[in-house]
Image (tube, rainbow, N blue to C red; front, side, top):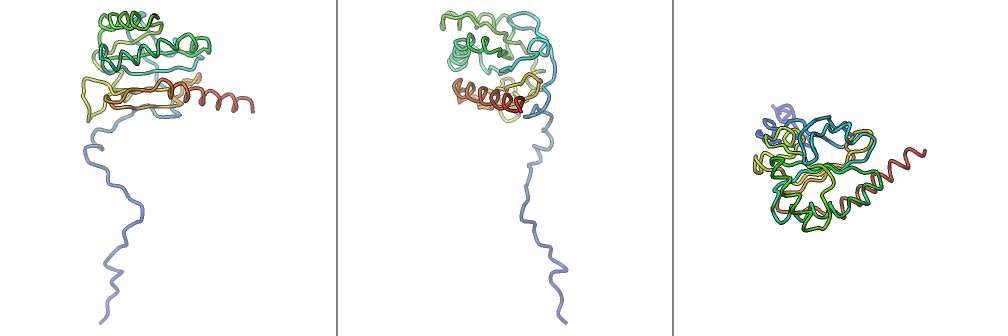
Length: 195
């Protein structure tokens, strides 16, 4: 008697994914493109900052600083400092965040100012306990749990995330690419609003 083998074997689907079990256990919320960026408050190099009132109505560059005083981070902050006049004229806010204390960040900002010839004219928020940086997906489970990756978010005037850049610790950020993406996002929103 012939048996129908199809009864006993199911065909594997053409599209599938295997998610590692440790990912399922560690995955949590992190801001994504198009999502509303949450409000928060923290001490910074310019005093207490409450995020939404501070950036309200502006495009914002919000970025993590992995290792103040390191050569790469010092160069990155110096480059951001050099473009601040143009960003401010365009109505764009800049906010940094680091796992270091305010006192350490103030010393570092002074060092960067001496090196670049311009003051660091935007706040760098202190997050020594990692509450904020962990919430915003700036600390990765497979990297150093006490250090942020190089993460940058562009937030639009409606307080929604327009762009996310993530770099590992060993690759410096490109200020030129950040400014290109920021201008492209602003141009897109101008075109949408004009319709």
